[in-house]
Amino acid sequence: MLTVGTNMAKQPLNIGLIGCGFMGRTHSNAFRQVSHFFDTSFQPVLKAVCARNAQAASDFSQRWGYEIHATDWRTLVESRDIDLIDIATPNDTHCEIAIAAAQAGKMVMCEKPLGRTAAESMRMVEAVEKAGVRNMVWYNYRRVPAVTLLKILIDEGRFGRIFHYRAKFLQDWTISRDLPQGGAGLWRLDASVAGSGVTGDLLAHAIDTALWLNGPIDEVSAMTETFIKERKHTLTGQVQPVGIDDASAFLGRFENGSLATFEATRYARGHKALYTLEINGEHASAIWDLHDLHRLQYFDHRDEGRLRGWRSIHLTDSDHPYMKQWWVPGLQIGYEHTFIHQFADFLNHNDSPNFREAHATDLVTDAVLASASKHAWCTVTQDQEKE
Ligand SMILES: NC(=O)c1ccc[n+]([C@@H]2O[C@H](COP(=O)([O-])OP(=O)(O)OC[C@H]3O[C@@H](n4cnc5c(N)ncnc54)[C@H](O)[C@@H]3O)[C@@H](O)[C@H]2O)c1
Image 1 (cartoon, protein in one colour):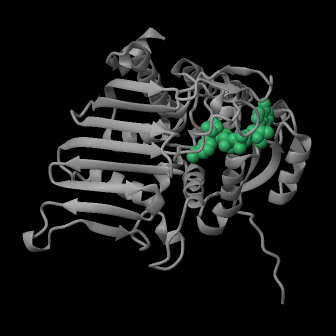
Image 2 (image 1 turned 30 degrees about the horizontal axis):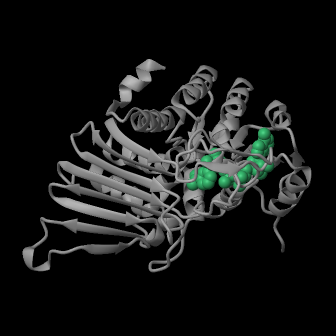
Image 3 (image 1 turned 60 degrees about the vertical axis):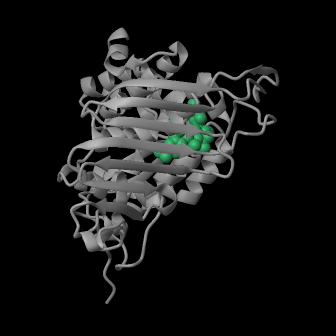
């Protein structure tokens, strides 16, 4: 006898996705996969998708199985059929869409950086808090099992007093001076759209992870550089000044007294997405590397002397964060799973990082840019007060 399967116990969650580029794909994959692997009380429904180009929106909706597609995001925000607006568009659109979605009473998930500036993201925080709607920002690296395990180990006090936190995020894709700025695919080089260069794009990820793992950053001393000063703009056809930072580095102090060393660049030849972090404490140290994301390197000085050394923990066992939901021990997972984990947590009422937490990252990136332009140390909270 054949039995018809039902999802009666689950509450449908109608999703309206805005933006169907790189992040539109990672999010759609998470919406499709989450119920196959995680238990939640919601059943995600891929209701509508929006992109600027009608053909792209139509192709994307067919490929991923969205019910309808549109070219104006307001159609999704105004639709009574949509419970959750997911913003996966360039940075200059986040604020307007998020505020409209909150005012329409929708849950809002937004890509990072939340705002182009901390002032912009503060308006978004106020809108979601005033409307009382759930909100989350896609800082997905928190959901790499090795990074989540590191958070658990730090919270258990295994590292003792923390002395150092250092992070790097290195790429090499903008080295050619022939690369234009602006338009589809190249909006990251246009400061008016992106807000900043690698500071808001790559450093923001490293800062979010650091704030989560090691607490607030009090002050920073930064330098930035724009190596290619002029590029042709795709939309105007004119050679125009480049307003973004190509490279950004800062020293800083965490509230817990530890020292911060951070670097991000798109000019590190040979590196495509080398995000690494290291933390050194009184008793233990740990290193994580995005290119080997399923491993955590861990050293514990309290181990028996004869056996003391760096361990390479391969996170595939069921007692590792998130791994019980996946395959059998020894078989690893990858990048796309971080988005599935974050969405599963959201469905299970863990919204972290929410807009307010992501705004804290924008306060640090603002301080980094201010420090670089003034050639001076900047206090993160002082910059907040100046807004
Ligand atoms: N979490 C991460 O690791 C991560 C990685 C990459 C990008 N991002 C962030 O995700 C966002 C999108 O980046 P991406 O790489 O997916 O960009 P993308 O250029 O690949 O795609 C952008 C999409 O937005 C659509 N779009 C642009 N303006 C629009 C508008 N006004 N209305 C409707 N649709 C519009 C485009 O049609 C396109 O489909 C950015 O904020 C970026 O910083 C986050």
